[in-house]
Length: 310
Image (cartoon, rainbow, N blue to C red; front, side, top):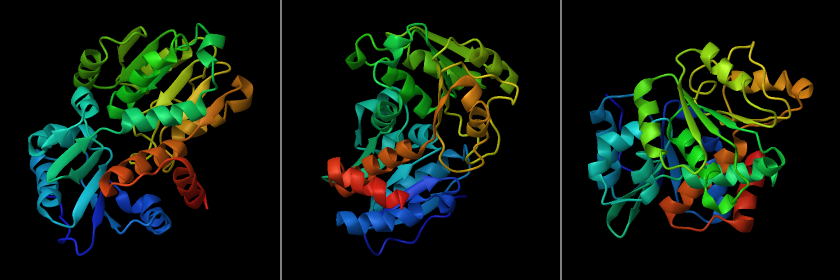
């Protein structure tokens, strides 16, 4: 059974995850709050992966009914918590409904609100990482997203967004080790304007085959969570990344085996490698802004980045 916090004595935002005490946000949030003029604190709530529905419901019920509990950021449990608790929210945003996941819990006008911020935060991170016009310069280049959770679906949807016009990949490959989540991805992304291929890959060796078949200039994304809460990589050490390719490790902390595999080939394959730091900054500031009803864009966002890096 999940351990619930004591009723909040001051406005409190929660971090619902697996190993929350290890996250940099526990040190960064107080610095951000002071700089941004936010009257609030952060506390972690650890839940085991794929916990029983009653654990998720107990946490959401606590936040909903505790007056000074302002909201939460959800990681790892985005899909499971949504499925267990969607009936407990008075408002669910369109992205949360579309992707069947939530990353933000907040309160507004007496309503408990669920938002999926990944489509926004992943898009901001991608725009900062992928060179402008990359897909037009590499018209055969594809994308391989390893994993089929909320982040993977948000990335796939963003890369196909109509605002990019013709600057889109030739194909997006989505690999996952289990069938149910892959089937859900097929349903959600069925109308993508970028051709999609879905691969059931229960072993790293099967992921290797997809990655090694990618054309020059392709993007490979680790959206599995491996290398953060759990050690390991979705690829083997024998996998060769695409020449002149882009590699995105969504994690910024942990053992980061996937990123180390890419770094070992950085020079020989001329890779551009990005970790999850920028994604981390956008992901957190998007939710903090929602929970505390404040604006964190422009110079305020840049300030958060500078303070966190320091």
